[in-house]
Length: 309
Image 1: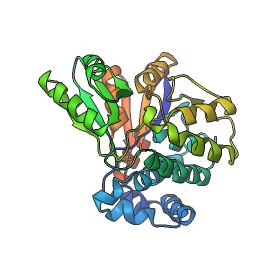
Image 2: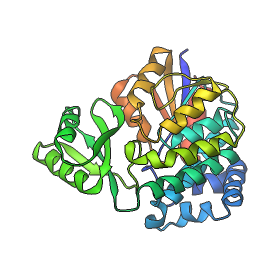
Image 3: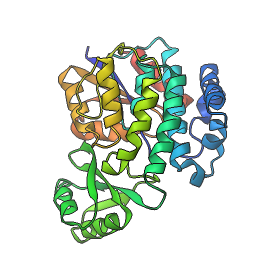
Image 4: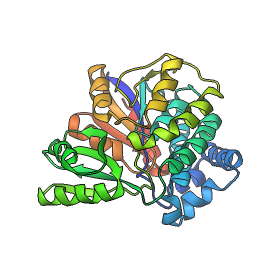
């Protein structure tokens, strides 16, 4: 039997109503949402369940809401006694994975995210930056196009061969989109208020490093694959360095997936709203078993499938 990996989804997967089913159906999930409200001193639950969408899409809200929802999904699945061999998180999801792998507590993950989201938004005010997803068989061509655009545009997520994400200055990104359109390359603006994983986030690094230094970190209790290079990491000092670096360099999602496959993973469970990560896995390894948990129905289905392995 192959290995099992848990994948934690990232920003842009949010939707109004996410987490409600888990909150209403599982006591452990209620405890997690209540903990988030207490730590952050505001209602994560209300923003998740009621929105409005505009409020949910603001970075300072999106990040704690997704973290809470995906960690609740993880906790609910853990109640069935299911333990993975490997973990990774997509961008923001790396914080959910850190908590699940016992590198830090969920409470400390929330505290870090509170600082991170504020520092990221302050680094680039709303309306000054953007992110665009490119979906095309020749998505690599978009890298060359980005270098031809005047202004700052950078590759920020290497998700799969036909799925890349770019980040940069708002006006330059508009020109970039127009060039993509001329080339017949499908693209869409990502619903975020900041350009993540690019040099524009450098001003946020010190605040993030400082808050990481204030919490207790432990070695992960499973194989832990990191965004910055796609490699396994167990050294606590290096984990902190890579989490700070993650703000400013491209997320190596495709490399993570390929390394997991090479190491014997054949079953992937995505935790959190929607199934963003699963699309990348399917493109790279259509033979892999893909499951997810975002509500009570998918929780029961996934638990049953894993118990039957």
